[in-house]
Length: 481
Image (tube, rainbow, N blue to C red; front, side, top):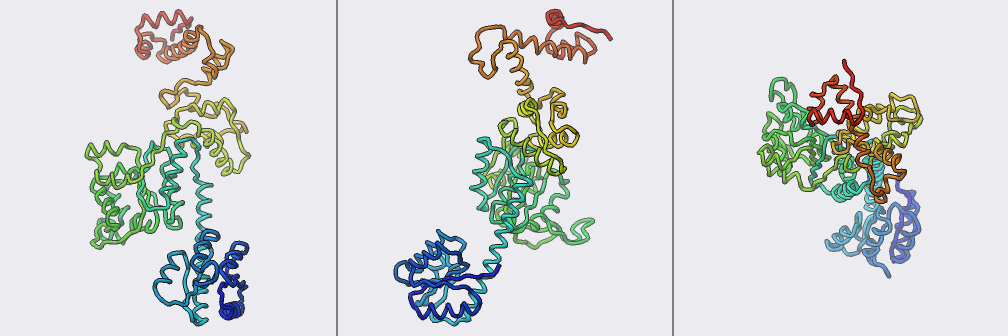
């Protein structure tokens, strides 16, 4: 969209007349102000594409007005007019945010040139702003980070603080916690968002090919190198490179990554020429890098270069309050992709999913939701749609017992909500619960061991006499095969 409306502020009537006539002849709508106060009032109440302000006016001066404009209309392009040629006024105007300045007297051709340049800058700014909004919107829609737990809120704060800078970030967390999403969020909230985001999994590429992938190679550098090929660092120039699983990178390549961080340059495999690169590095690992440093498997100097801003992602089992939000997000996303009506989960299933350990973290949860939505023909998803729950494996170690079943069990026996456990009085809850747990457990193992009591006792970690006693006490019917 081309520039249309311009404000001219000058206490000299002749200057206002000359500029307004010339600008209107070019097709611009022009408003005039006699002093800084009037100009500020117009800027606050009207919408302008460009303001041309005299540096010396009654009331608010052009330079002071410039600072106020930055507060009121930060995107308004301002050209300052000054009758005093010299470096001081020019520097001061540009320091306070002026787009350009004119030294009186000036030719109208100079005004035309500045307006044309400002028009191109404005259009470019609008294009970049639009692209930035589109990219952010696309990122939020397609790959949004979901979670409102205290640990995730801290992650968001860190992203907000670090994204505008070029600081190196190290994202640490188990597989499936969303480390690449964090890297993308940093990129799409930085000044580099219109430049490339290149992701590279250091563990997925054979070591002998990793150097060529990262730094590129010259023709004839090795067998099969039939032409020059730029590497990931060159492809990411101006943008962000995400080095996933950097703990798996060989030591010799670690030295070259260190050089990129220190010198901002690379050398292609088989080449001798240094190539300057402007790349922000975000690294990630699911390993304890300090342990690798102690084992001399990871360079200590590189570790401290990468660990400028650490972001630690907790496993899903340690931020369970985010699970319902994630479930809803993945349900909407999957149903939208399949173009089917939105499916829901029954309350008992939501509780079971929230209590499951999720060893594969967010990635495992998303895949489980996708599978259930695709395979189920019912609009309401149930536990039957999640074999991972039916198998009885929690995947979370300490969370293997179903809390919901325990609550129902105690509630049936004591007629009181498990949530109000502090109100419970003395009773036989322990023996009652243990009986309910032991019977199915012992029956299951006896069946799996073909009713071999010696084998079942060994698996349980108890002696055979104890097992025989439990079988009698619990009334377990022995079978023979």
